[in-house]
Structures are given as structure tokens and as C-alpha cells.
Image (cartoon, rainbow, N blue to C red; front, side, top):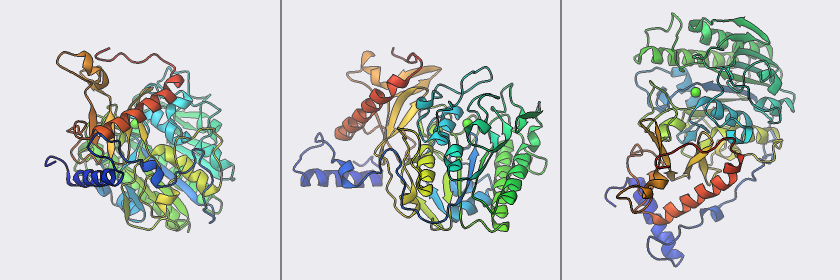
Length: 472
Ligand SMILES: [Ca+2]
């Protein structure tokens, strides 16, 4: 026990006490049924009990921004006073996750409230040659709020299908200014509505131009409910900052781009204040996945494209002065698929999809610290390779030298009597350095069963054969 983090010792003691109370003995007894302890919201995201005026909604999505890249999450070399102010005005999630470790599937999850495998976007990312994109059958955030008459604008990187078929205007956004793809792709061009207005793009002025358009939209729509989705191109590589920010941060050009994103956030907040709508505007700030070659994970292991938490755990901030008390931090485990059912609940709408994987966070907004999820899933391409509960992470695969190692098949390897079980301290305080599978067989069993159940649900939705692993 001496090797366990203090909070884990507390959990172990609690578990032991519960087992004793339940008449069980020994570490092999099953863990208590936590699902019976509270009521879960229905999977369809039934309208919640919010009856106030519909809020404006501003979603700010950074690209490849790490968990540790902003001040509110511990960054020291990058100054983000505006994002920090946003966090101080609302709720900071310390266990907020993207629904994938790369761009397109994470964005599909955010946009639909469903794991990307349901919309056919779980495999890698949409590239310049891809002919697939977000299907019309999916209800997006834009389409959801259009049911309540919102004005909608999408600014920035889309990455849910190449134009013209899959443009944001086909998915509930009245207007669009931005790019279909990542800034390292050959089809990276700037569009204003349907018109391709710039190629190649002057990327150094991109954040400023995205921001100008977003601020104009706020000014023009301040008297009607609106949704602004601002999906920044940076700090995805290649990195570009404007002259005003270049060379100014303590974290290289990467840090410069993040400080410019912070400036942009400040301009949006100022516009909301100027037009008198800041109290009833829900602002959400997050990232689509963890950092790539540069960027800070705040001590989390791995990064973009890996199965470790650095790939999935991201900054997540929600501010809404009329509903969310200022200055709060919550450790409730959440994922970007929760955004759509949250907004649906606020607007009193049931999402159109028969199955929504996300859950409304409205109770967390109002002060609860409990996650609405028993288990969230880590997808790597089309495969569930991990499960996350509030206290634990169980992961079955990791890349090593270009090969996808399958811990769950290590019993085939010399010297292994059993699979190599990675049951990790989900708080990530130890950087996912040690597995506690040997110490907590009951919790291991529970998480393995949750993973098997998830695979039974999601494997039939795969479009491709399983990836080759080591061992096969
Ligand atoms: Ca990304």
C-alpha cells in the first residue's frame, strides 16, 4: 500500500469498508455496484429542467492544444490571462476528455454527441483525398440549435469532410468562414461561404481574421440567440503567429500561437460584454486532442495519437454567469460528446439520434461533482482500447516503434503467464507510470467487463478490419 497515492489509499480503504459492510471478504470480491448509488440520466439526453432564457453559445476549439498549455492548467511559459479569466468566471474541468486522440473523430464526437464510429469517422482523419465526411443523417450542434431558431456561424477548421459536399452550411451553420482541413494538408484553403477566397493561405494572420469574423457575428446577432463555433487552426503545425505575437512567449513559436489564441478569446469576451450578453452566454473552451510534437501535457503521459492520457485529456472550461458559479473546479470525468446533450437539455430538446453517447452536464454546471458516466471509452481508430471510470483507467494497447502493442495478448509472448494488465490511476498524478492490476483484481475485472461490453456494442460498427497488433 505504501506505493499508492494518498487518494488511492483512501479509495482502497473505502472499498474495503464497503466490502466488509456487504459481507464480502478479500480483494477478489467484486467491487460495490456504484451504479445503484445514484440515478443516471437516460441515454437519449431527455430535456433537463432548465427554464431560463435560451443562452447564446460560444464554442472555442483549439487544435492540438495540450492539457498543460494554458495558465489555468499550470502553464508557466505561456501567458493566457483571458482564458484564465474565463476559467475563473466559471467551471474548470480537470478530467475533461476529447472523444478521440486525433482531429476528425474528436470533432465528429463533439459535433454529434456520439462516438465517431457511429458516423463513420473513427478511422484516422479526413485527408485531402477522402471522399467521406459527416453524414447528413447526423444531427449536429448547429442543426440542434437551429430547431430553436438560433443564428449560427462556423469559423475556422472543419475537418469533417472536404468541400463542397460536406461543408458546415450543410450541417446547420448559416454561414462559414474557414478551412475544410488541417493547415498541413494540400486542400488547406480559406473559404468565405461557398467561395474559395485564398490558396495558399497567409497563415500568420489567420487567428486575427477568424477572430474579426467571430466578433462581427456577435455584434450583428446580439439581440437574437446565437451559436458561434470558433475552431482555431493553431497550435496545429505548421505554426504561424502574427507579427504582434511572434517571439513574445516563453515557449517558442508554439507558445506565441497559444498567446494569440488567448488574445482572440479576450476579444470575444470583450465583444460579449460590449453587447451586454455575457451573463447569458455559455462559453466553452476546449481542444480537439492532446499536443503533437510540441506542447505541454501538464505531466500526463503521451500525446496526440497515443493511447495515454496526454492524447485525450484536454483543457475544458465552461462559463455561463447566469447558471455556473464562478471559480469552481470539478474532477467529474467528462468528454466532448457531452456538449450536445448538455445544450439539448438547456434548450429542452431531445437529440434526434436514437443513441447519444454523451450525457448532459447541466447538473455539474449547477454544482454537482459527480460524472454522469459510469464508463467512457478510449477509441484508437475504430477500436475501443481503453475504458475510463471516475477513479480508474484500463488500457489494452499502446504504440511502440510503429507497432501497435496489444497488452491483452501478451500471454502469447515468452515469459508471460497471463495478459499484461494496465490498470492505471485515473487521476494521472503518477503519469500512468504504474499498473495496479495486481492489487485490485475486482476493479480490474469490472473494467475488463466494461471494455468487453463496449466492444460488443461498437465492433459491429467498424468499417475496416482490425489493425495488426503485436502479438497478432
Ligand atoms: Ca487536432
